[in-house]
Image 1 (tube, rainbow, N blue to C red):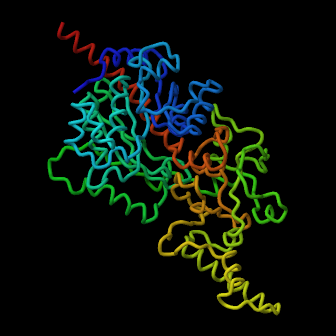
Image 2: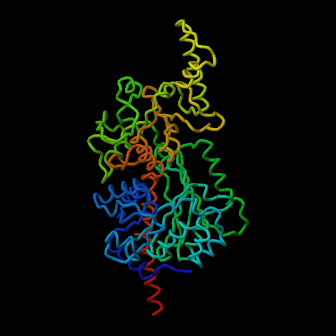
Image 3: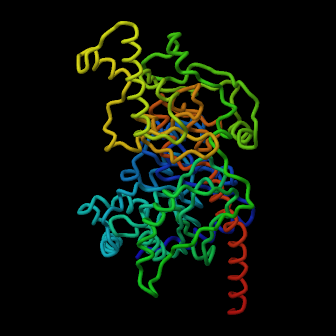
Length: 503
């Protein structure tokens, strides 16, 4: 088993204890949700690896300006730590370049790779050739070994705690513990940390044993009664832990519990209320909204001052101050559905939307009959009118495909599928009658208005849906910063006392 470089670990502790800011390497970075949060918590975002060109360009643009090397897409499987350091001209060895590694390897990388297989791969690094599913896991560990981080953060979906009967988070902890790290993981919901979105994710923190002896997670800052579905999903994810035998070792940490005395959760209305309204049906009638790629080249001024603490933060986030004009407040061209969106009630999903559409279709047929126009049931004209009003999706197969947001609740989880359609987040304002814009999606993820997304609308939606909410990342980052700057000093002082006692 390979351990990390203790010399490098101790040098990094000394550097931080003498005032140096911890340097972050963001693996599988996406556009940079984790990086925004860690930057706000006082970390330096030194580098990132991301293989999607648009997301890599966004990360580079926001954290390194016009430096082309930082905006280049890279595949972690073919980029070694030493190559990364050379390409970015960091002027040091990979073992000295970074203090903290953050990121979330795609969960598919861990599928059905049991403990025995992980041990086999640890002992035989070439074993990934026989089990490609483990490749990204191996590369993540390869970066841990080469970069000797003081702390590691892994983020992923809750299902990694019960993925095909396996607890992948526990297996990651086991591998890191064998490399000298103290680990803990839990499930946290972003709504408890000021994000206007009920997004549940697994977070795993590991500290080198020279830094800390235990792992803690940040205390909630906001309160909400989560809908029953979230507790159900949590129970499924935690079933593996519930089924463990007495005495089984594990690294799961109970999440800090919010209480009703905290501030109420930030709602969708809180988050979006100061953004300029977009009246989709009026834009269609005027011809201003047409089919085609949505580029970020149409400046739109704010129409209102920030109305609450959340919108003020989004527009005044240090390092990401809002521009004078928004350019990514753009929406999808969905002319068939705008009237239907207006008819839907808050919380309606696809079955309700489908019933509304059938009612609208029947009303249209009745209107034609009143005008003396007969449309025979089943005729080509009948089918044409129906297709112009009623969505074609099977109600039984797509019950959750659509959802109209509540104004007075946080949004449901944003997914990468936003890049294909945005029906999962229909704007709560029926007068606007549309799905959310790119900037509204960014707001619901807590990206500040000054954060820029590269590419056109669809790639931007995908980047946002894949990201960790920056406010959630900031809470985690502050917790890790506390450990690095306080506990590391205490551990170093303890080591000095022990050394003095021995010699």
